[in-house]
Image (tube, rainbow, N blue to C red; front, side, top):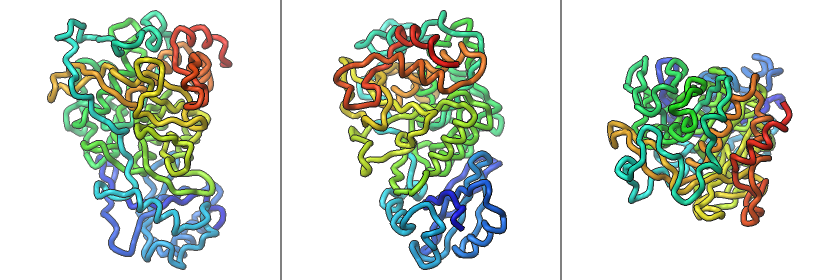
Length: 438
């Protein structure tokens, strides 16, 4: 039994497209488990554990991480759960911690968009401000755009695939979605899109995923290298911007399956269970690392030090080698008040105040507004990574990470807020990237 690598306890309910299934909320006295077994565990041993736990097998739905969903019958922490079978010291304690983070939406430990998720009051149509709506400047009127956005001449000749795990991307609601957003449609790999949310469609009715995507493709828009960049919309959050931990894992696995080079995750989960080994998210990120995929994740917008156990959020705190965790910087060099931070958890800061983002066409006409948040700082880094990937002949997350972090400029105010004590800087990255190991 000790060959069981990981067990995470979580109430679970999900619905996605025709390849998925709907799992009803567990009845009183039961709860759901996410399990990941070591590859050496035999089917016989897995069956024996299932019997020992008095559990029902609800299926294996992530082909890469191979996370299983079991329904445990009986109260959490009952004698039917032998602690020695798990990688956590006290199974019942883990269950209670996850329960403590639940809400009524979707059940269980939710994965939520970094708050605030909406563009601030007073946002405006960039066209009316005299900007070109076909490709407005990425940033903010209070920072120098050339410091954090590459030029068209920086784009290489290799193709790059970026998976966006979020609220989806604007499209029609159909088993064969058509992505028609005027700013984004040319970049979408429709065949690889997928929904793992409570919605059956990839369509973004929230707006967050569409906004994030518009930041990532900005450098490629309207250039000769536009065809080099493809985005893969993977909907893991519903139309209210909420979901669950399991569907986030499924989204990461799907990105791996669809050969993504980079995964953008502007999402945090409040899962604070103290596992003795690795959380399900950490295992999923490790699987991405084994395929040389870079994962760029948001630090979150709680204004907290996420190095502290009480403030742990995932995937920001997963500490995977193929990960860049991004905090939000304000206009003057300094941490945005809302941004999470952590000398041991956050890698670097990027602009996260007054970022130009595309809106939904059916709701706001597809125009642009300013938005704040680590949700928007994160895709700025992802967009940088996409340009750097286009310069490589083969995928290598270490090379991308080296270019971005070594190219960041140290600023004294950030010395206690992140590992590098620095803010991203494109001109310096141009200089440092050629020296990074291939």
